Length: 195
Image (cartoon, rainbow, N blue to C red):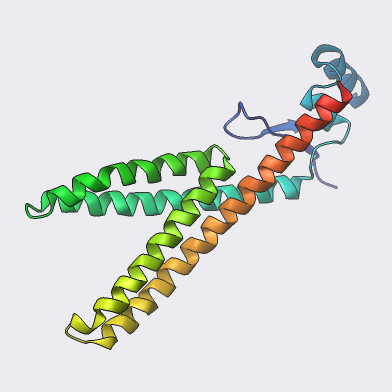
């Protein structure tokens, strides 16, 4: 039997709070929390067993982290590409036009970090649209490359190896942020119904 902890979530905390539950007088501890925090406080409810299990909470946070890391990685690559275009003297206009797009990607990535499901869905949609447009472009202009259709095949293989893992991570981020939102809303509705 391991040491028991309670995982406490809050929209005001960057990370969840772990509360050690192996106390000498747990009943007194629970009573004091009830007395000082009130019956509708999340910690009081958690001590009564109304919080999700450790594995469910950790799974949700891991999904959100995957989505955030993938979004930050892609936003960073796009930012590097734009900066390199700025350094080229013949493409600065295109790069300057792309700067708001980079800001949008980093903003949506921050939204995923803050557990916002709309940001996660928007990021996934923008990324998938970008991939489809690039594949169409590659298909249309593949005959102009020195290797013809070989370039198209290499491009599709590269996209498959690179894009599929990123899409999987972004989908996990969407699932995690949606689960987090459902969890927070179910807690709020229980507080309203009981209060």
